Each structure stands twice: as C-alpha cells, then as structure tokens.
Amino acid sequence: MHTPAILSVLGEDRVGIVAAISRILADAGANIEDIRQTIINGIFSMTMLVTVDEERTPFDELQRRLAEAGEQTGVQVTLQREDVFRYMHRI
Amino acid sequence: MLNISPEEIVETLHMVTQQNLDVRTVTLGLSLDACAHPDIDTMARAVYDTVTSRAERLVAVCEAISAEYGVPIVNRRIAVTPIAHLAAVTPAADLTPLALALDRAAHEVGVDFIGGYSALVHKGTGDGDARLIDSIPEALAATERVCASVNVASTRAGINMDAVLRMAEVIHDAARLTADRDSFGAGKLVVFCNMVEDNPFMAGAMHGPGEPDAVINVGISGPGVVRAVVSSLPDDADLTTVAEAIKGTAFKITRVGELIAREAARRLGVQMGIVDLSLAPTPAEGDSVADIIEAIGVERCGGPGTTVALALLNDAVKKGGAMGTSSIGGLSGAFIPVSEDMGMVRAVNDGALTLEKLEAMTSVCSVGLDMIVIPGDTPVETLAAVMADACAIGVINHKTTATRLIPAFGKGVGDVVEYGGLWGSAPVMSVNGWAGVRLMRRGGRFPAPLGSLRN
Image (cartoon, rainbow over all chains, first blue to last red; front, side):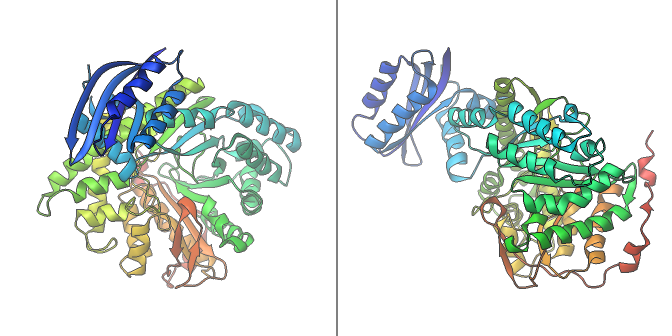
C-alpha cells in the first residue's frame, strides 16, 4: 500500500538535516514527491510530500526512525498521513 | 505535487502542539438488546462478552489513527443500550451484576468510560426503570468506569417532576456512598432533558434505540484553538469578524473529527455515526471556554455580556462545523463544566460566576449545569428545583439541557474538591436558599408545552 504523507521538519537550521531525512526515506523505500523549504516566524521549516510503501516499511516504523533522526539533529520531525491536511484546509 | 502550503502545515502542527487541538473522544455505540435474559447472571455474562468482543480493537485502532494522523485522541469510550431496557426483562431486585460486568468489560478493553447505565423516564417510570434508578448510587460507588444518566423531561412529554425529585435523592446517595472520593459518584451521573441517542461525551453517553448495532461517534474539541484565534484579532474587531474567525476555525476542527470518525469506523468495520460539534474544555491552561468568552471581551466569565458571548461562540461553531461534516449529531453545543475548565474555576473564585448565571448560559448552549460542586447539605428539594429549572429551559426551548451537580458530602462553600485529570478541581459553590420546596413536593407531571404540538 502506497500512502501519501506529509513530512514536516521544524527547528533551528543546521547542516545535514535534509541529508539525514532523505537517507532514512530512501532506505525505507519512501519516495519524495515534492519538497519545500521556508522560514516561518524565524523557524526553519521543511515540508515534503512523500509516498510511503507500507509493505516495505510500516508507517509506525518509519515514524520511529524519523523521530530518532530528529532527536539526533535537534529538530522536530513529524510524519502524518496527508489527508489530515487536505481535510482541514480544503473543501 | 504538494497542494498544501507550508503555512497551512505549520498551522495544523501548531494547533496540536501549542493549542491543545485533539479529538476529545471516539465513542463506540453498542446495542446490548441481544443480551436480554431473565437470569441476571446469564445476562451479565452476555453483556461482558458482547462488549469485550465488539470493542476488542477499539483502543488499538484509535492509537494507530492518532499516531498516523498526528492528532491526539484523548478518550476511547463505549456507550451501550440503556440498561433499564435490560432491567425490564429480569425480575432481579439487585442490578449491580450488570454494572460490574460493564466495568470489568471496560477495564478489559482499556476504554476510559462506559456509559449507558441509563433510564428514560420523562413520561413515566417503569418497573425496570425504577430498579435501575434505585441501583445507581451503589453501581457508581462499586465501579470505576461506569457512567449513569437519566432522562426526566422532554419537549414532547413535559417534565416528570416525581422523577426529578427522585433523582435528587439518588444524587445525594451517590455522593454519600463516594464521600471518601469527594463524592465523585455524583460526577458520573447526568440528569437530562431531551437526551440525545448518539451523544459521544460522558457521563451522558448511551446508545439509543434508533441506532444500528454498532456505531462510531466522535466528539471534537478545540477551545484552545478557538481562544488563540479570537485572541489574535485586534481589540476593535467587530463581532461579525469575531464570529467569522470562530466559524473558520470550527470548520477545521470539525474536519479533523470527520476524518477520524470515518477512519475509525472503516478500520473497525462499523457504521460511522455522528460528529459532535461541542467545544469541550479541559483543565489544561488555555483550553477553556471561559477564556474564549473573556477573549471575546467579557472582563470575567459570568459577568454581564457572558450569555451573548457564549451564544455567539456556540452559533459560530455550529455554522463552521455544519460546513465541515454532513453528520452532525450528539449534543453539539459548547460545554461549560466548572471543574473541568480553569477559566470557569477562576471566575467562580473571583465571584464573577454564580449558579444563576450558569443557568442563564444553559439557555444558549447544550449542557449547562455541569460539574458544579455544591454544599453536601443542600436539601433534596433544593437540588431537585435547580434541576427542574434547567429542565424547563430545555422543554420550552426544544433543546437538550443537562445537570451534573455534586453535593460534596461534608463540604461547604469555600471548600475545594480535587478530582484530578480531565475532571479537574472546583470550589464548592453556594446555592440560593429560597428554593421551591413546596413546588417540588407537589410532584406529578409538568405538562407538555404548547410548543410540542408541531404535527
């Protein structure tokens, strides 16, 4: 099952964030469909649209790996199913 | 292609992490009709087996959904067929085996509460109803997670004044039997007018006779989010602008509830029921309906202007919510419990909020006199008269009203009770001493109002 999900990274900017996150996604077989980076209210913010291959890596396992990487790099990494944003912000 | 902007993503994350956005409850409604049996022990076993088998996956499914969507689901609950229906088929005088079976089942499947230890007696009290009502104090004292509710009035039938007086006695007994827990038994007992069949919120949830065998109902939350939006408006923003801002936020909150309800129902293989649009506060700082009223511009909740601010809030939430889901149901009106809302507690302590003002607020929201602690020596007739007043507002205005009053045994005005968790803590509030004692002793039925003749 290929599940669309939004990956968001919030925190202080530093070298290696994108590399660390991308490596985990690649290892898990999750494809990056789109990627944006911006500064909102002084906070580094990166959002990615990814497709998670749940047969290869379960959603909760990928969440765990990403959260671990977030702790190591000092940023908050969140992976959520994409429809929660679509439901909330689009009619 | 990412069609959601980074700002929108950050807004959603901020709502959850900073403003206490959550889904307050996912409640599985279950019919226990098939459990009916004249032998109480056989029936209790069937109740336990039905609840534990049908709700086996409820908690796990909610936890998975919560993690995948990044939205906390605070409570997982079960609502069952009013137990008075089952009581009617058994001659057993002691119904506590049914309450104990429900409590054991709730522990087994890991839900926070199980509601439906209930009877509907708005027009008259049947034999099963009477035994159920008699058993409530003991059932609430002997169980941890069972919640009880009794409907004593409806717009179609009027008010069963004998039942109101009886319920005042039951509340006192429930409080006395749980005196060692600050009379918390009474906090698990709601007296309703125009009770709804699909309410996902406790303590008044039950699974009505018009419902399918199993159904998922969801109660939204979000006072903290609404307060933040109102607070961000300039002080001179007019009330249309305030209403518009609340409406937009209510839409977003409701959409989350709709998504969670659909997904939970799908994964559990049961029908999706309703999304309840009630704004439900918690004792967390800022997650308060009183704070919204103050953000709108009332100096302290309970002061003049409170009723109009609450009416505006409640109406705007419904308008935004109605765009967010086609499955509105339950109570769908702002909750104004005292102990569960730090802003309400502060308003009581400041002398701004009284029982009488809360009664006025009841007329413009769903559940008015909620989690209010009153002196333990409040006379039965006085307690009954307070409830009858709330019923009258509901009966005449075609709306649900409910009372959850706790006469804290051994406590008086100025004392504070602590329940902990979502139940919070509250000061004991004074009750007007000039009650209609003779009125309440008259008994009988308050006739159905003229407004009930709509056919």
